[in-house]
Image (cartoon, rainbow, N blue to C red; front, side):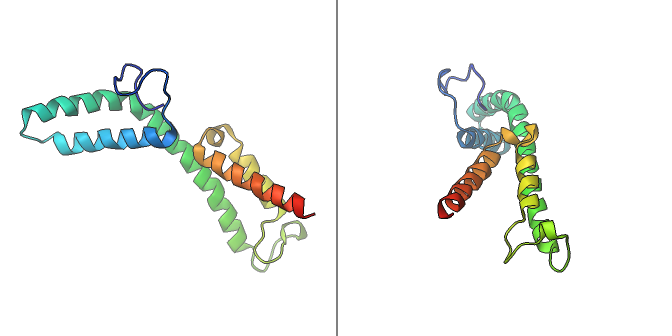
Length: 141
């Protein structure tokens, strides 16, 4: 995902997870940051290799960052609606003891299923948790 296909560290048939890809990118960023001003000649080979790898990782990192931002914004919208509900709102939005209203749930679900969110692992985890809670609610009925 974040490694270039010609990168010798990752075999072509192995696709690293999102976390592994982020860890690899961070390691490359740290290598560049730590080594770019080094006075050790051999360190610059590592820095140049890390820069080459980063040039391929950056578009994926940017996409992952945008996806996470969209998920966080969707979740923050839920929190803000929940906090702002206090004394007002229509009957369709009123719930008991901090539960999200059906309208809020539908809005959040809709947002998480948008193309800018759906590919994000954060969105997948949130959707999985929502499905688990729904299954629990159904089984209690």
